[in-house]
Length: 223
Image (cartoon, rainbow, N blue to C red; front, side, top):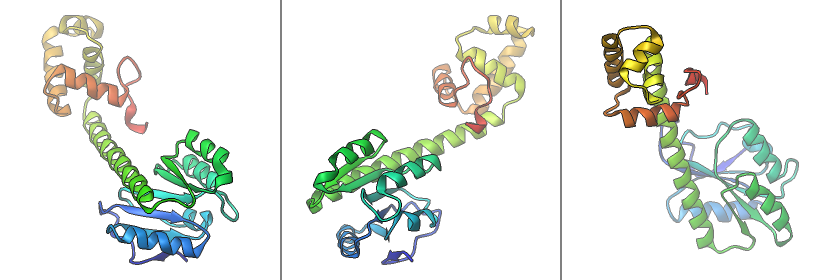
């Protein structure tokens, strides 16, 4: 069973939440109280297995993780989350003898690590930075999802025109490449700009870069 002061908000919420994995119940309680002083939602777990068996909240989140745990270690959990494709900033808590392990964790993408005993403000600052990082990731992910939906609305010919236009070809060159009239290219290009909601060719180029469709197979919907 996990410990929490209140249940998770609904999955659609944007209320940030701090997840804590620590086998020492006194430390779990102290962290829950610390985060509560700044109004942060908290969910605590006694082991890596408990977290892996739980549904993580669909909200800005970060993980405060002890590097030494019974069963799966903090490093094992970090690796497992990466294999599962779970993106979450991780702040490791380490003992003085765990610095080499902490360096390994940072190389594997950890957001920060704090050596026990740490100052409360250092932990609050690390969590605030990690939550902001996750907010930015979620914003980027949602924007990319919207781009993919727009791109999916293009016809095959419109995708061809978009790829060639964002590679720098002029309408006449695109017409030659596709074996169609320049007027047809202009029509398709107008459809592309409207469907992609692009205000300029420069903006369309940025969209194509985000979708990874410039000069490559125009099928980014499963990436």
